Length: 271
Image 1 (spheres, rainbow, N blue to C red):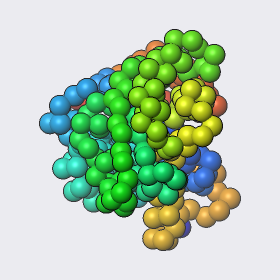
Image 2 (cartoon, rainbow, N blue to C red):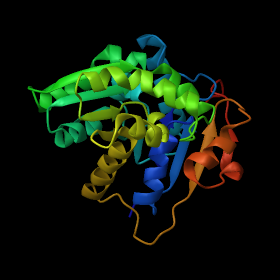
Image 3 (tube, one colour):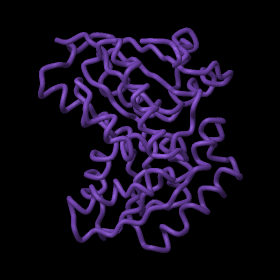
């Protein structure tokens, strides 16, 4: 049994989709979550800036002696390889697990990727998918507005504006004939009901945060680092800017009130 926590970071609220999966599938584990709300979004930044942000996020989590760190951020997982490859803890990103799940799910080898501009421009998903299935065709679309929808809690299935924005992003993928779409940013699974409705039941959605958590679960079990079954894990949430709506939106996304577990921590502070 290893009581050290799992560290999870993202640019803002998006990574809570991974937290939700940990709470469900690894309920005995402690969680330290860091949302860089001061600098969200990451997806429109340069590679150099994203790597610098990722290093700060990792340094923050390392002070908690985490047994595993998860980049619950598609942009960091795709772009900031130099920042994530040298960490001493066990590490899981979202690209590799999601790519593998998509290859397993597709029936016609046509896979769509919805992600941030930086992720699409990096070609990371295409590279991973092609390595697993050379015959696969990968179609990417940059969806920057979806991050804003989630950060502002515009995730209701009846929201006309959100639905129409999603339709505009998905239509090109449907015209390309994809039967599988990777939600390549951890913000996007929070919009999955709307995305599924627009895409249709014949399209399989891949939640990259969920797939990363399943990969983390496998690694911890194989390394004998899990906590004992039946133990009730704890969760602590940190944000880098005192956004008024973080706890409120987190309650909607997670289904639980975490307002008493959220701490503001400026990134300018030394860890």
